[in-house]
Image 1: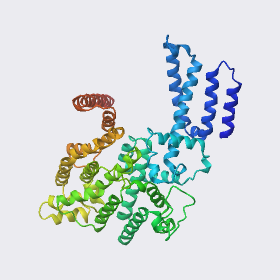
Image 2: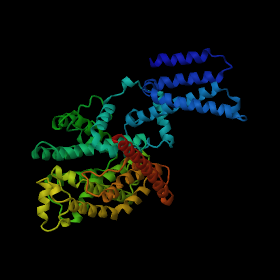
Image 3: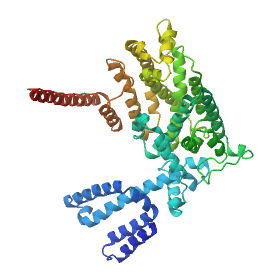
Image 4: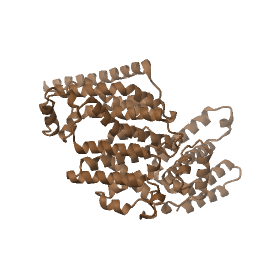
Length: 508
C-alpha cells in the first residue's frame, strides 16, 4: 500500500501540465514522503487534517491580503500545495526523529556514538537522519518490543500519576518518553518493595532489583562468558542480561517490560544514584521510625534527591549535552547535580507533608519523632500501626505538615537555582512542573482543615504553566493572576447568587 500510493503521487506529478511545475513538484515530493512515512501519516490523520485546515486558511488569507511581493504572484492553489507539503514534511521529520530515538541501533550500536545523535542542531544528527532515509526499514521489519514496552510503561502510571503526566506533557517528546520510562521503573520498583503480598516477598524483590541493577550496569564484555540471554533479536536491550531469569523472578510480564525499558536507557544513567535509591527502599522495608529532622532530610535526599539527579542525566543526554551517567566524566557538573538533588529533595518533602493522612492509612509514617509531643511513641503508634490519624487530631497533623513544608522552603531557593543550570530549552518546562508541585504547599496551608490529599486547582495549574512557558514572571504576572482569580471568583459568585434566586423563586 505504501509503495502503491507513492507511485500514484509520482505518476500524477508526471501527468501534470509542465506549466504547473509547483504542483508537479509538490505531488512528486508527497509521493517520496509517503514512501518514507505513509503508515505513520495515516495514523496521524486527525492531527494532519487539522494542520492542513489551519495552513490552508492561512494561505488563503495571505494570498488575498498581499498585494505586493512574492505572495501576490502565487495562486491560492499553489499556496495550498506549499502548505500541504510543509505539513507533511514536518510530520515525516517527527516520524524519522521518533525512529532515531527509539531504534538508535539502526544507525550505530556504539553507545558513545548514540550520545552524539541527540542534538538536532549538529551535523552528526542530520547525517544519521540521511542514513535512515537511505535505509528506511518497513514498519513490519522493526521489532515491536520497544513500542509495546513503552505502552506498558505509560499504562502503568495510571490515574495515581496525574501530576507526573501533567508535568511530562510540558517536555519535548523525546525527553518526555525517556523520563516516563525512568519514572515508571521508579514507581514499579517502589511498589515491588512496599506492596508485595508478604514481607518475605518484599525482601526478595529488593534482592532481585539490586541484582538487576548490577547486571544492567555491568558491561557485556565482563559477562559474556556467563550468559547469553534470549531477547528475540531485540537489539535495543542489553543482550548480556539473563531476561529468562528475570521473567521467572518478577510478578508478571508488565513488570518485566518496565525493567526492559530501564535497561534500554541505563547506559546514560548514574549507577551510584540508582543504588542509593535502593537504600531508600530498604529503609522503607525496615519500617524504622524517622527520629530526627536530619533523618527526614536524608531520606528525602535518598528517595527523590537521587531521582532528581537521574532525571538530570536524562535531560542532559537527550538535549545533546553528552553522557552525564558516568561514561563521559568531562561533561558532568557536580554543582548542577547537587542542585538537582535539592530539587528532588524539596518535592519529596512537600509530598510527605501532603500525604501524612494518606500514608498513615496504609501503615506508613514519615513524620520525625522530634516533631511529636511527648511521648512521641503514642502518636507514632496511632499513625503507623493503628492507622488512625484522625485520633491524633487535624490541628496536630497540620502542624506536622507545616513544619515539613517550612523545611522544604529552606532548600527551595537552591532547587530553583538548579533549574537555571539546565539547558535553556527545558528550563521553562521544568520550572512550570516544579512550581505546579510546590503550589501544593500554599494550598495545604490555606486550607481550613487538613485534607487527605491537598490538590492544586486545575485553573491554577494552567496559569502556572502558562506564565512559566511564556515568560510571565514577577509583579506583572502576580497582578494578572490576581485579576484572573478575581474575575473567576466574581463570575462563579454571580452564578451561585442567580442559582439561589431561581431556587427561592421556585420554592414560592
